[in-house]
Length: 159
Image 1 (cartoon, one colour):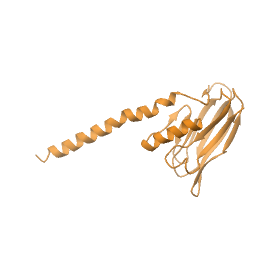
Image 2: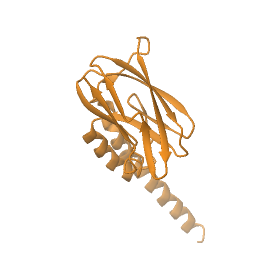
Image 3: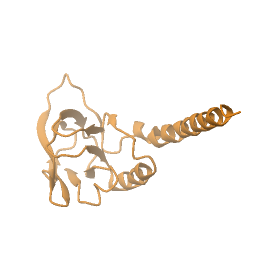
Image 4: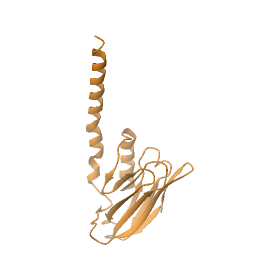
């Protein structure tokens, strides 16, 4: 009789964990849509832009905070996390990033390794190659809960 309670508890835990998988998958469904352009071609020339992720006191920042590009230009973002926390770089519109930030609050374990998004652990580097096909103002942000609120966002102006 004592054995049934642990087995029931284990079964309930497995069912609960399994039931969150579809929710996390739905949270990632929008990742195939890219408002800021499209993934770049690594075989074609690209201007390199270095973006550093840092913490300064209670602030979390990207350096540089603003990047200007021409429509049609391909950029090779070299992302470096010089901070002591994990950080993300997610390129989208402001509205899309705010909507996704709400999803991240529900699923903070969500990690990004998409054509327009990377999550980096401390003292690591990654690259994103991106072609800006639309004029306008776009945003790169860290959507890990609390990081955006600490100031971790930047702007891309496409002329």
